[in-house]
Amino acid sequence: MFNPDLTNVLKNHLSRYSLVTATAKRAREIAEDAEENNVIITEKPVSLAIDEIIKGEYEIIEPEEIRNI
Image (cartoon, rainbow, N blue to C red; front, side, top):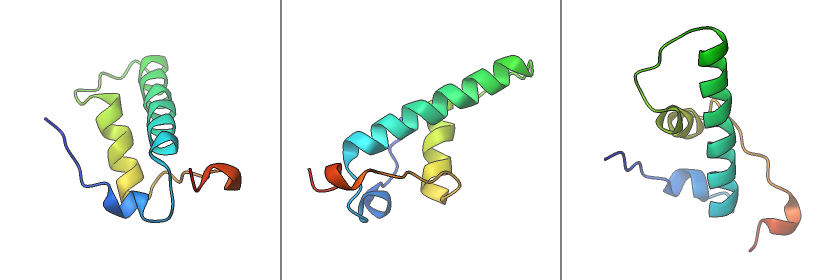
């Protein structure tokens, strides 16, 4: 089971809701791109999306009003 350490991602007052929403959005983009280009991906799109977020390749921009929820 894939269980990454998300403390570095959440330390900048990023809410878990924003993290989950951004991960789902990026995973859909990865899956759609693979389907359009007829590429078979062996890893799950959610795992790829989380990896990109942890590495800083995909930035989550969160509205100021929900940062402290």
